[in-house]
Length: 549
Image (cartoon, rainbow, N blue to C red):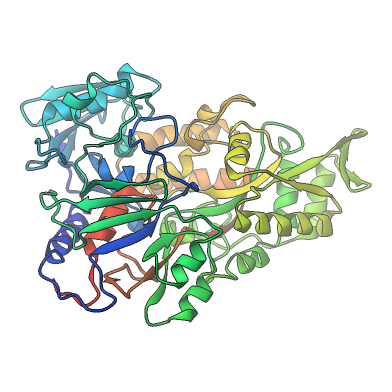
């Protein structure tokens, strides 16, 4: 067995020690509070009283801090793996089996200790019930009294990250339940908070004094169902302390520069125009290249940042975030693609395409193009409007902008019912996972939902897929970098998407009641309610504005 030292352990230790410090005595003053209020991620108008972590239907907020995984990542550091409920792990010589040592001293919120059987049950659940998503491994077994071994079919160094998607639950509570249909109003997890009160508009969680990582400084955590229509008002009047949401962040910060702050969680995201590679006209690389050259991404990046106190940089041609992977991206591809109308028109001619009456035409057949943008996400819709305008100005092609609610639009995109659309692509979990979302082996047929949003653009390149297989089987960073650059070259040449700008989870935070938020420019960890381990780390760093740790 080879043992590896994971630097993420140091980061976690820092987070937990700060969390423990912040639980000391505090002096409350006017404006101070023992409750932190946040907007629920992807908030619905009202909450559902169901906290089943396996449910396929609507659930309540905060599941990601009630339940925890064995491992986590720090996306602020390019996806550094962090021991979580597992205190360490080792790999077998063939790279197929990872053996996790269960962290001692962890208890569930009902007071029962975390056991080997709980971990074994949780990891086996998706193997025994395929409808419970998350497992790409083939088997799990107990080792000794405090270890669990997870085995994959092939060398799987890069697949270890998938384990972070598996929630660890208490076996005695779940062994008699249907994981997909059970309605859980009293969830029991290992996280630092447990449900205190529920209403359709707000959920309050109480902090746990026996949390293995140290007691959070706040007594309560309150999630509110703040929608895009009212969240700006609630933030401005200080009803909400923190959110990762689509608001006018410039106005928020300028209204109280001392207490209102902008935080960008650079999580590896790149806002990109998705092109449906599975059908004409975007199954032709010449059309993809032409549209990419016709777009002015500098103007789009500037527009995207109009309500932010900072500028989101134009994306590299690789589709990888320059904020997260600058040291991994081939230097010759770091420069963003510039608008080149002449080259765009030449690419269309090379493919035998022409433009007639505003329509893209080939062999006498017209190919109408629709750009799908969710009507309830102004940010993406505004970007779509500019992209459509640029395509018409550059190439004379009229693209129809359409789209319903985010839920319906998202479903249509996952099923391949689109020509063009924009969304956040790329991932900050690791270079392998940032590239794997374009793995041709993950393509679903048109009309079938993409699995976990993988390869929604339905692009397939055999050489690219072979490189991914080679990356999956190594933990040598120099080899991973070399292979990733080969994959980048293929991506740039084939243009499966049009990368626009590096982005992330834009957030705003008030220091009126709580301090300790990550640095806005160079965060050591991300503040993001949508990510469990990262949000827990953030909460453990916070302390009352006038308190002392």
